[in-house]
Image (cartoon, rainbow over all chains, first blue to last red; front, side):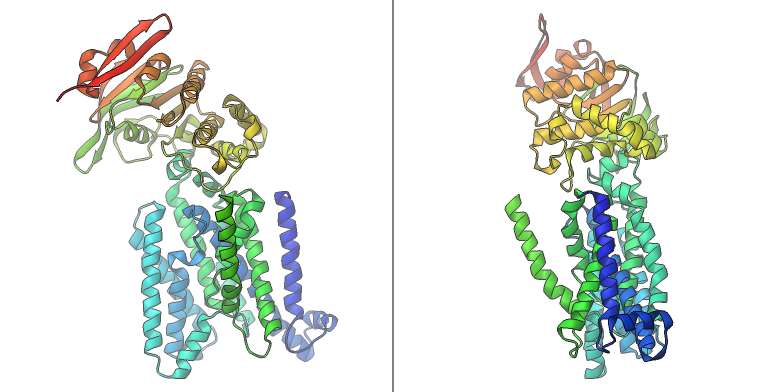
Length: 327
Length: 248
């Protein structure tokens, strides 16, 4: 299949799943009625479609694209198929910010307090990474700094949980960390969109540099690629996307790890081509997973992050086994 | 094509490359020889401007894209990540040429594949080839870059004898066509047969610069390489055979 055909098929898949996400939900609005209500915005169905399902579907696309795209960029930059978007500590930092907002009760004071705190956490994590990794352009130092910052943020999150004032607050924190797109509003969309778009533009422009990096850092530098600039592009681009995604959806694992794997062979293993395809693939996977949470156990509020991990981990194992057999 | 003036690279206080001045003109194929740790790799990386240095290198003064069009670099570590096809990997050499890839690019890639005898490998995944085949693919990438100057760090290490000779001949042809090559290697016999000139490095310094037959004396072999060797001009060209190490 040609690259162009893959892009078209993936786009069609995302459009289909986006529509499905709009039409599936507990309020039992029929498909035609739902679409009409979405356009007119009238009555209770209009409210459900515009205020609940539309933001949820848009965030499904945005968060999924963020995880897929930054996962592909991170794997390309580190030349390691096990790299995932949270590797440089941004998702752990965002989680810490959100957890602090819940712990202090700040999140109850206004609607966007929690995502804003999460964004601030991601920002602090990036600042820390760049300070730790200094001006060193090598990828290894970046990985180690990322591991250190993730561990630090993880420990701080555990501490907050440990000191939670009530079981209720602790449960709130735990549920938030499982990741979900339920009950998000257009305000969440408006908050995340600028970060997601800016991050996407930055990451999509790193393709040529990532291609050159397939030959090693020295060869890439000799071909005119500025490794320093590429590193900043990857760090900032993925931090913007993953920070914003975590801020509005919580921690959703495995999408950024699995999606680039699934598509790598199809695009001839070329890192630049893996970027847009993984963005589309991530959006499709997240929409599908979010629909599944509503279909499998509509009354139990199955969390999105739990589902992606439960489906993603065995799937990942199967892929590793297949890779082992081939080599 | 390349002019070095007082090029010095320090590691801490210790000069790894020490005050090297030299130049390369069109048509030259220069063998960079010297024992391990003499500073050959560091000299080439500094000449390209990939590491901090003192003194001047004409290449390091260019902006990165212009430099990439002036000189191609083959690092010693043969890194290939992902299962890129041979043709796509070789096409990476066209990156410094920006958007004109479509017009001249395909032709340059095909020529490079043909020069390295890789036409039938086009669609194979580069990671599944043997070490020697991968080395040829990476050389083809450097050729596809169509830079007049090629700097290669031990490109023939680990290759079988036929592949070593083939590689040296590809570089000779590149120099004859008006380009130039600076190639580090340990095989003084191949250097004697193929290189138009050698640079001999020892402990960071450029200790000799000239045709191998002129610079290769018993004293230099003993002083720099710590060996005795047999070196003769024969009807089949120069022949070099190391015999024994020197007693310290």
